View 1 (cartoon, one colour):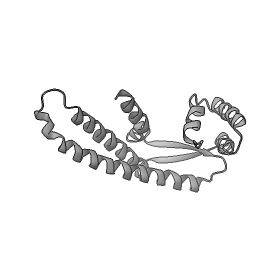
View 2: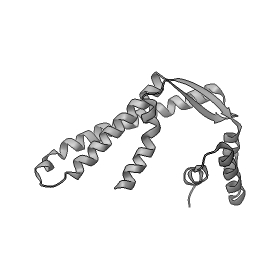
View 3: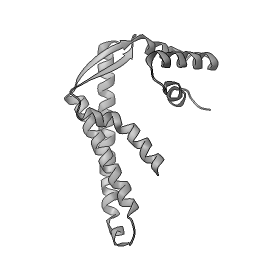
View 4: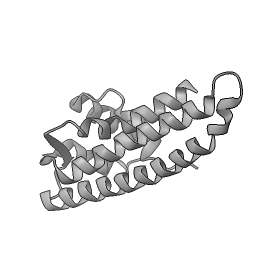
Length: 155
């Protein structure tokens, strides 16, 4: 259960932080234009906001449906679970909407991110060395593991 909570919080944390930010900086590959980056950011925030709104509604309905279980003695684990999800998705939705409508975004073109994109076409050992080198230069300790999990297709 704790693993689930930690994974959800790590997914939502960026959007939660956007709720109180005045400005944000997006680091993009050097070969991506500012207009393209802005469109991508706005598309992602719109998609995230809509997805989190959908999950707020679903979890709120499930929370209401679990209300009769309050009569059962002991902790109402379902209510805790759905409450956690309602609050988490709501805060993430608010962050996405704020990022979309109220934040001032600046775009920084980062050559290392272009190299990371090109690393997708390399063979396994060379790709791993390249990603580890880029992670070191960017000081992103978990980038290599993240890249393997997200960018590399599994069989």
